[in-house]
Image 1 (cartoon, rainbow, N blue to C red):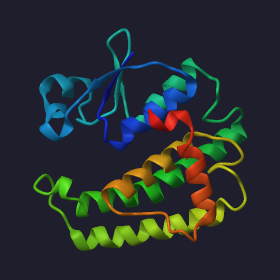
Image 2: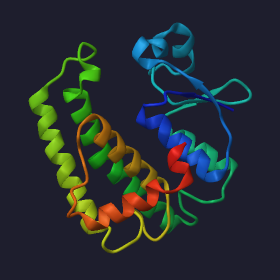
Image 3: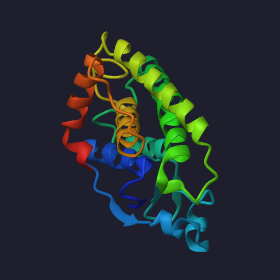
Image 4: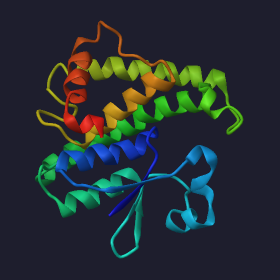
Amino acid sequence: MKLYNHALAPNPRRVRIFAAEKGIELTLQDVDILAGQSRTPEFLAKNPSGGVPVLELDDGSCVAESVAICRYLEGLHPEPNLFGRDLREQAQIEMWNRRMELELFAAIGRTVQNTSSIFQGRYKQFPDYGETQRGVAHQRLERMDRELSGHQFVAGDRFTIADITALVAIDIGGRLADIKIAPELSNLTRWHKAVSSRPSAKA
């Protein structure tokens, strides 16, 4: 299987971490999204949305969107399980992963898009809105710190897709939007250190 990838983009990293946790080796095909390579007719035939990641299967068909790709990989390699073993656990992990996506990842993404120099000239930026979203992201980090006082990982007592989503969001926020974990957020700091030390985090 081939993963169309960009080394610095957050969503391909989610898939790389997920695959690394399962010991799945994917062939990486880098796509220079900043140079417009994801907008060529050839790439749009694989993913009409023009984004990465895209997983090309051995039969030539393609799956886009990071969570969809991860679900496919989970189906191929059920262990170690990252989406939940039974209906209740699956629902809990899905709940937490959606919270990380919609409340944290989205706020950080909007901050980056509207304040980072990387996107100047590529999108119309609204810096005031970006700063508002920065505040939303910091509030979500504070809440995450409180949530982590009751369990080791985002969705409970084991590492799951929800931890991958949160880790990638926080790391891209720190790198491109100066959204840092405040020193007083001890639970979040403990969690981030633990998940960052996993070998898969380097994928």
